Amino acid sequence: MSKKYTLGLYEKSMPDDISWKDKLLAAKEAGYDWVEISIDASEAKINRIYMPKEERLELVSLMYETGMPIRTMCVSALTKYAIGSHDPATVLRGMEILEKSIELADDLGVRIVMIPGYDVYFEESDLETKKLFLENVTKAARMAEKAGVILGFETMENDFMNTVEKAMKYVTLVGSPYLKIYPDSGNLTNAAVTYKHDVIEDLELGRGHVMALHMKETKPGYFREIPYGTGHVDFKAMAGKAWDMGVRKYVTEFWYTGNPAWRDDLKFAHDMFEGILDKVSEKYKKAD
Image (cartoon, rainbow, N blue to C red):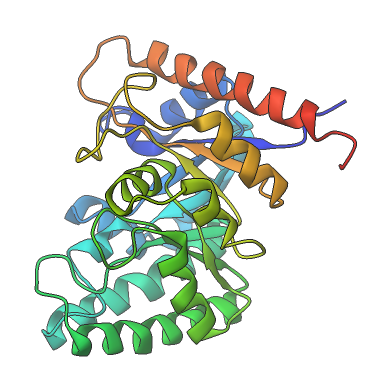
C-alpha cells in the first residue's frame, strides 16, 4: 500500500551550480517525492519568473523524465521586495515578482506558493506597512484564485508573523480559499520559547488552514543552518499535530553549506523524517 503522505526537498539543500536534472535526480535518489523550487532575492533566481515558455516546457519534461516533480515554490524574494514597504518602487517590484511567480507555478504544475510573513523586513513596521501588506496580500489572493494556485504564509522569525495565530489574522481578514498557512516548525518553536506558549496549541489555531509544513531545525535565537537533531524542535509532536489537522505534505528545509557529501545530507534528512512520518501515519491509520 502506498504511503499516506508526501515528503518534499527544499531546492537550496543542494549546490546551486548543478543542473535541474541533477537536482531532480538527487532528490529522487534520496527518496523524496517532490522538490520545492526557490525564487529568492538573487537576480538569478528572480529571473526564473521570466522563463520563456520553451524552458518551462523543458523543465516540465525533465520532471516526467526523472519522475521527480516540482510541486511547491518558496518566494523568499519578497523579503527584499516587501509588499508592505513604504517605498512604492519596492512594492511594485514585489507585486510583479508575486504575480509572475504565480504564473510560473501555474505553468509548472506547482500547487503551493509560499510567501514570507513579513510586511517589511529591512524597514520599521508600522500601521501603514501593515495596512499595505493586507491590501496587497488581498490582491495576490485574487491572482491565486484565478490561477487555482494556493498561497501559503510562512511563519517567520520576527514579531510580525512568527506564529500561526498571527498568520490566521490575515487569513481571516482576506477570507480567500486560496490563502492558507505553510508554517515553519523551527520558527514556531522559537516563537513559543519567546512568548512562553505551547507550540502545539499555536499550530492547532490554524486547523483547516494549514496545508503543508516546513520541517526546519532551530535553536533559541538561531533560525538557519542548524543541523537536524542539534536543536530543540520536537518534530514528532509537530508532525503528529499537523497530521491530526489533515496535513499530508511535509518539506525538509535545510541548506547546502559546502559539504562535499551533500547527497548524504539529503538521504539523512529524508530517512529521519520518513521514520517520523511513518510512525505518525501508523498511529492515525484507522482515522484515514
